[in-house]
Length: 306
Image (tube, rainbow, N blue to C red):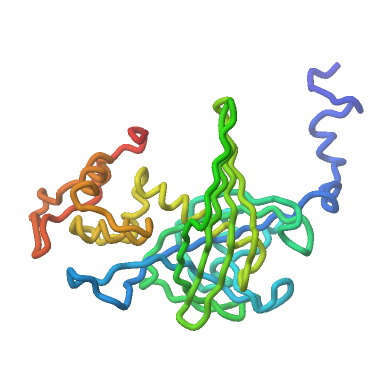
């Protein structure tokens, strides 16, 4: 008599796995893909009243060289092969399509609505990174006919709130515009937040897309909104800063990501409150011509983030 557990067919786990057909669900399961959202900051051409160049957010896009959406612009990405970790697939596809290697990316969100890909039901895991674009050499490859940076502009064009007894529904329409100096791509996205009995559910719908493939206008919009939140609770913005920087330089990064001007006093209060940065007084670099220098606080603890 065996003490191993058996299923309804009388099989042990070892016996079950030995006779299991790995293709059993291959025709009914969704395909698995990855999409990479690589953001960077670039200086504007115009100089402001302080004599500095404001920055703006850019996102890396590839031009599709094959169907579907041939000739349209998309995020770098592709299918995960069998026995491949999705994170490894993301790095592989990014290198194959853009030539970029060794970029740290964090998992952002999983997109799986039927119909998002005309070929079949595709579930895509999206990854995001904020990088120093000046240190990366972008070159199109694999099934991408071109790869380039696009300036990102995301703004609210409509908002509607319906209040109910135990909560509310908030619908926000965003207009996404991507431009590279020669062409503009557009997307209209609806974000729906439903709050009921203390439970929050959020969804996104693609209402319109011009020049942007698949539902990637939604992914870009969602990623930028998440980046705007993350810069206040994680050191992600420090990934593109020099070792020592002024608070004015740091504020410029936040203004570019948030898409709005910030008052220095309020910004400093909020940043110092996070504990992510500290004055660089212990290494001989107390100030430069623009004021005190700061650096990442090596003692910062993410567990203290509310």
